[in-house]
Length: 87
Image (tube, rainbow, N blue to C red; front, top):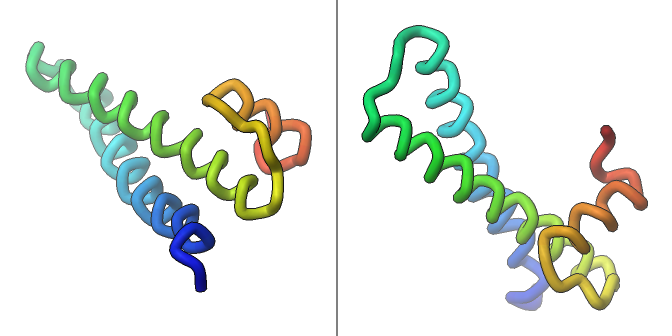
């Protein structure tokens, strides 16, 4: 398997881990108030997870033969159009 072919799979695995961490952090906010440092960490976790999400989608569709995906808007627009993501 070509390294570029497996890149989206590796990103998906990393996204799953990051999303699980983000869900844990959000659950903590439902239990108690967060300190300022914890809030900053939660914001960072969200940004990191978002970046992984759109890069995973972009890599997946490039693996599928889609071209011209430049950023998060292109990646998510394509994901909606092709049914990977639903509203």
